[in-house]
Length: 223
Image (cartoon, rainbow, N blue to C red; front, side):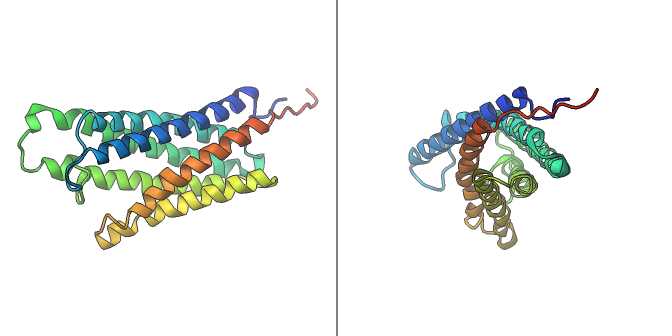
C-alpha cells in the first residue's frame, strides 16, 4: 500500500515551491521597477507594470495551492487534519485574491466605469476600498491561517524545523499586518507584506530543498 507522499506528490512539491519562488522574485522586481518609474510616491503604478503585477499575482495563486496540497500529501497521518486546514485556507486566499485582481484588471478598465465618482471606493488599492479590504482579508487572514496550520505539520529533522519556524514567522508577520486596519494606517500594514513576500520567499526556497531531499514513502502491507 502506498502512502499519499508518492513520487508525483514529491514532484508537485518541488516544482510548485520553485515556481512560487520565481514568481515572488518576478513580482518584487516588477514592483520595484513600477515604483521607480513614478514621479511622485502618491501616484499609482501605471501600465505596463500594473498589468504585469496583476498577472503575476493571479498566476501565483494556483501554484501556492498546489504547494500546500504537496505539504498535505507529505504530512504524517496524525497531522493531516492540520495540513488539510492549510489547503482549505490557501484555497480561500486564491479565490479571494484571484477574484479581486481579475475584477480590477478587467472590469475596472471598462469605459462604463470611467469617470464615476465611486470607482476608487471599489477598485483602488488605496484605503478604504472594497478591493483593498478583500485583499487584506485574503493575505492577512487566510494566508496567515494557512501558514500557521502548515507549520504544525513539520518536525523532526533540522531542515523540517527550519521550514516550520520560517512558516510561523511568515504567518505571524502577515497577520500582524492587520494592525494597519486597526489604526487606519496602511504604512503599518507593511509588516504583513514582509511576511507574505519576503519571509514567504524564504519558505518556498526551504520547501524546495525539503522536497528535493524527502524521498517518496512506500509502505508495504498485507493485501
